[in-house]
Image (cartoon, rainbow, N blue to C red; front, side, top):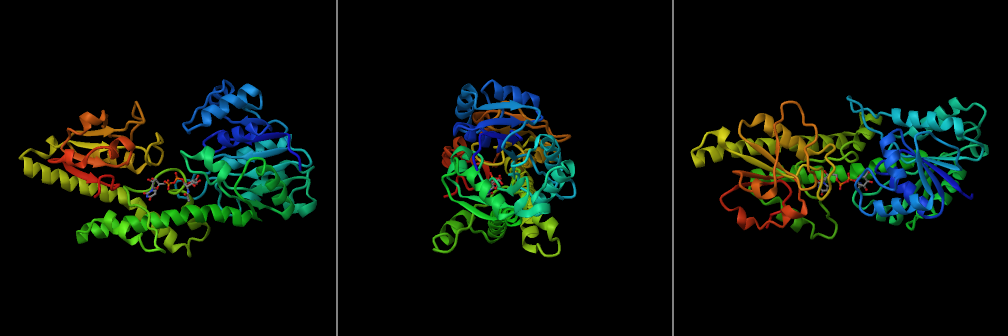
Length: 421
Ligand code: SAJ
């Protein structure tokens, strides 16, 4: 199939890079977002999120007229839905953004259109999206009703790009294409082949949905294993970083790195979609989530023990012991604080510990809205290193560059192994 106009619904961390990349390959792309501020920023050729090289591509495609942003959906040959799929309080997937996107595009749909769901979704979400669309447009036929003869093609093609490397991975990664019918898959593959240099691998929608969830759960389980090892090693007086380095010398072992917990809006969320779909069977996946969610509490306890030790060693009251938290983002060298275990630990410490708790985060200039009662102070690295307890939470480059010998006399808690020998 030949595509001329594409509409991308949702201009966030995935939608905007995807829209810009298609536009850079000559397609006329309309980006649609409910956030008027984001739409205005993009139409000025600027970006509202941080991602290396995205600014250059957006500037050039807005200037060339190939990318335009709006708040209302317009007609196109293909539609890509890239809206958030968070979970609700009870850890059940919240599909309300997909439902709103379906309602937004339904009125402009026409025969021959392709609709792709890119958002990470629980199994069955693509069928659900197609059902919402069919309900809104009884004059058109959809794959669940007419199979290969449908007026509209529907597929799930999950994004799998790593924040920080989105512009590279978007093009180079293999792409899983899960159509609701084989024809839906083949039309969707035609679209992605416009820029994907990796392989476009065809499957069905449900397998594609589960594939994305399985990838992120695999990583979560592996990190949980590393986090559990780190707690066991602490008890057994073994350096976990050295242990993992040695174990990974085995040709069939590849253990990931322990840390203060797992953050971000993908790995800490997606495994729950599997648990929700099969609560009686997803034992390991649930346990991994629990192990990783427990890690920030374990780190907190370690710091509170350290406060007692420092107070005794320096003969000062506990409320005179200062703690500097190095790093607040959910992983190294980014400014993204969403679902960050580092931020959670720093805030909770500032509530639990009566003394000063400082935060050093070179990638932000002001603290976000903190949890109730938190009294964190953002200071620079040099000032932070004067604290009694140095708690490394994120292995940002400037922190890794510190010579651990210069920290002699400090009580150091390195949750990332940044200074491990
Ligand atoms: N982390 C560890 N130890 C490790 C690796 C990571 O504690 O060895 C922590 C990080 O510090 C962070 C969290 O895990 O808090 C997640 O970071 P990440 O770099 O593993 O992953 P994300 O969330 O940035 O991106 C993931 C990627 N998924 C996989 O690698 C399987 C990415 O490819 C997905 O596209 C993305 O989720 C997504 O959008 O789902």
